Image (tube, rainbow, N blue to C red; front, side, top):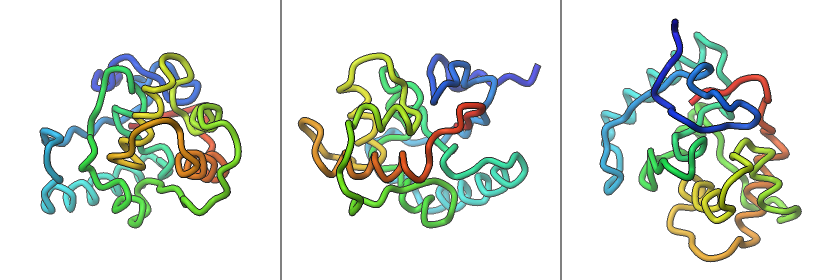
Length: 161
C-alpha cells in the first residue's frame, strides 16, 4: 500500500520493480537550463534527510534516466550530480582510473539496465557523467565506468531513485 508510482517501468541492477523500492523526488525543470540555487539547496536538505532516515547510500541515488534510459531523460544534462557527490549525496567517478574493461559490462555492474540498445545506455551514462559527450565509447567513458564499478557495485537487493 506504500508502493510508489513515480518511476514507471525500469530497472536498476537486478531490481525490476523500482517503484516498490524507491523514494521519488520530482524537480521542476525543463532540462534546458541549470537548476536554480534555491531548488538545489532544498534538494540537498531533503535528500540528506531521506538518506539518513532510510539508510540510503550515495550510490543508490539515481535519476529516471539511469533506470529507464530508453524512455526517460530527466533530470537532464544541467543537473549538478557532481555537486551532490561532493556533499556525499551521490557518486562521481574518477576519470583518472585506468580505462580497463568493456564499457557495457561495467555499466551493467554499476546498475544500468542490461537489455536494450547499447547506445541508449551509453547516452544515459553520459547524460549523468559526461554531458555533451558524443560518438562511440571512449577511454574516458570506460575509465569512469570502471571506477564506479570498482567502488560502487550495485547492491542487488534494493534500489532508490
